[in-house]
Image (cartoon, rainbow, N blue to C red; front, side, top):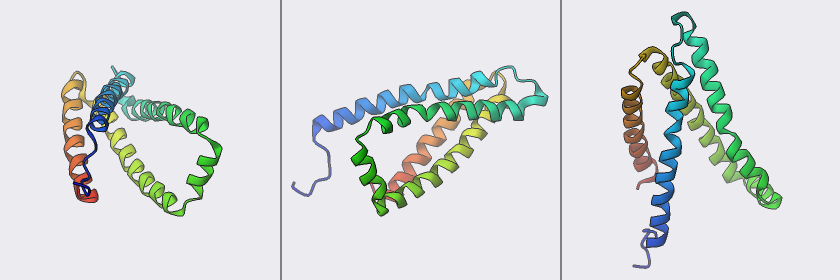
Length: 142
């Protein structure tokens, strides 16, 4: 049907492969956060959690920063000159702040959880997956 919003099969396959690759890469996030607070002394949980999460988040900016630098400067200027796009970036920033709060809480859960890292990761990722899918469904009516 001409009004169909379903992507052609090659694009769907590509999206699936990219989703799998993203999931594998994101799997290193909980590992890194748990690694940074492994065997943390009880009196240093807050500071180790904060430093670990800051290190983790600061390192995640490198890939998109390099990608942005390598993007054509005319395309960057056009995108940043688009008022509608800047509003979208504001919404993305709000979501990022809330996600950052969740990541900090997640890292603290690893610090508190001792040897229960796998179950903590499973619970937070289950909640993340379900709530993310529900919010996308509601916001984008998909």
